[in-house]
Length: 489
Image 1 (cartoon, rainbow, N blue to C red):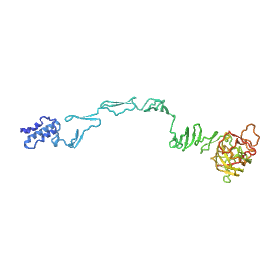
Image 2 (image 1 turned 180 degrees about the vertical axis):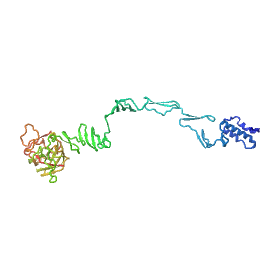
Image 3 (image 1 turned 135 degrees about the horizontal axis):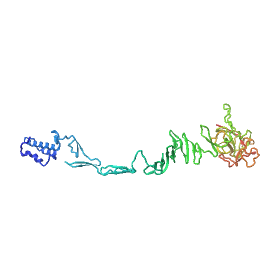
Image 4 (image 1 turned 90 degrees about the horizontal axis):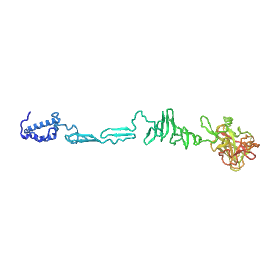
């Protein structure tokens, strides 16, 4: 309805707000005018005009949604609603302040203006290009383009064939190490510009495989799955060892030597002899059984009764005889060949002196390997008491003496002093001659049935050779062939 005429003082709202248009009239301005009115009859017209201005303001600003909301104040928007504001004022209980994140800017245009949210205009600088990669960042918010310098990558991944010095697939700072294709259907692996491994469609070829070389027989460098203590390793400088079950069985040394069970290379002229299916081979003399292999009795007779197990080795064929006498022990060292009747270790040697030395004297009995028909390496020796007469049984030796049946060995005898000793002996005049002569053979009985040193020997038995040996010569008062027996375990 039209408002009635009113006194001038009731038109003050128009005076206070006359320079403000409805669109820019804030609630705070409106509230400042309304708070000056008292609820009295004479202010009725002024309150009507106040309501009219408020309705017009809300209609223009688009705040009108009924009489119970809008416009601020007790009838305006709720204070507990969720608001995003430019600055916190504490009136709104669920207000949030709008803040800028990383590389984002917010520009406030003020009341009646715009709030502008923008990304930082500077380009991305933390993206770093790797080898053969190019980055092309655009200014502002443009895209970053990543380009492979060598062209595009397609799958399956394919490259050039490459070469041994410039493999197709290599490494930063080490371009001569990697993988390449030396020819069709082949792969090559190169290190430092040298091919170390090649793979073809039917074989693998390796060049200079290397390991640390610090392993041993129990953990060889090259072994097998589930059998790590069997394989090949470095046994020593310039030596290859082969182990089985954690122990060395075979070795090849720098000069081509073959070692059995370690650095056991044997002696000149020896050959490897099988010890059967359950034992390793051993080095033994090449002579004896290779050209002559008599089948001697090699077992203990009447083992359930008396037990005949002592072998009269220098009386056995082909060199011995069973004609006996007594004779002296010379100051030289004499060597007598024999064929082992049985395989095993020498457990005992039995000798007999008919007259003893006047002073302390050792009589040595050495066992030697054969090398081309002459004694060579000493296997071990026994020591008898030269002052004791009668039979002596000796069971202690300088080392283990192992004999192989059918193999030729040598028994040597010498003494440590020049004291006179006589012994039970084998008559040399009935023994076979074995030594060569200077000219026409001597007609002296017993000449050449042994070999002997060409000078006196008073030390314990040691290795020897053909140099320094000569045919044994027997005259009255010189050496005689000892009559001995041995037992073999």
